[in-house]
Amino acid sequence: MRIGVFLVAAGFPGRRPGEVLRDTVEAVAAAEDAGFDDAWIAEHHFMSYGVCPSAVTLAGVALGRTSRIRVGTAVSVLSTRHPVDLAEQAAVLDQVSGGRFTLGVGRGGPWVDLEVFGTGPARFERGFAESLDLLCAALSRETVAADGEFFRFREVPMVPAVRLRPAVACTSPETVTLAAERGLPMLLGMHIGDEEKAAMLRHYRRTAVRPPAAGGPGGREFGGRESQGAGGSMAGPAGPPPPGHVAAVVGHVGDSTEQVVEELREAMPRWLEPGLAGYVPVDGRARPRRDIPAYVDFLCDTHPVGSPGHCVERITRTAEVTGLRHLMLMVEGAGDQARTLENIRRLGAEVLPRVRDRLPSSRRAPASG
Image (tube, rainbow, N blue to C red; front, top):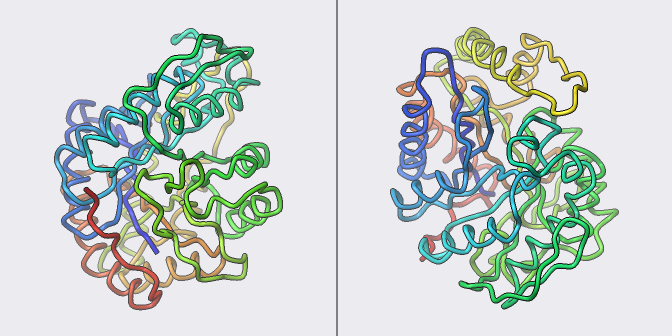
């Protein structure tokens, strides 16, 4: 069992983006001190929901500030990037960090980003599979070439050449199938509950051409070091998922569950209302609307939000229902840096040890590099 932190770089009202970015790096360092296994950084463009436009860049800064913890992207948006360029950046971070970098990628959405970066709606609508295949080739081969609809170029050497395996954000049966057919680990969002996560894992297993165990491309796990079976092998009702799948949940601890829930009910709508409004469709389609108070209630009811004992019970239930053995906890829900750091420290001191006692396979990963 691995437990990490998930950092959206949330732009709460009154907080300057530069301050949020610096605080995000500080939170990664605090997570390392608190005993978390990894830290995951989100990427968003032109919006306050998340103010980090380059997760791979901020991950590099965080890797330079730490020595043990793994740092990953959740996710780098592949529909607005050239896959080989992203692979080169991932290779640099893998090499200079001693293999502590994890690349997570996603399709993104039909947002204005596609217009600004010039990739267009077609890359989002039908180009993700080609982009993902090119990325995997660039992360696993000495040379790479392309002759597809969206990418076409002569063979070139990959310098530095690495053997990495990306994880893929999956929010639909189509993306689950895409990941399963390539033997790539999934990143599952915090907007769905345990039963939905379990269903996605079942769909993955039914679809998988080959299991991602023992590392996938090049015999390495998706994080970059030789596969050591991270993710565990304990089976839950959903069956034992292949090593590497990761799920995001809200993680917020305090003296009492009632107090913590009230804290998030007060704080999170101030971020989510203007933040989610920042998703601007590129082609005039209607933007999905969300009932923000109801969504916050769902997050508090479903995820480890409450007293230390309640958080332990929630994490244990998720592991038992889904079979997952890797979670990342979104820890910024209060919108205050001092509270975020306190949350990280208390989760590390009061929740992680009890989870590790209850789930014996849950232990901190050995230092990399």
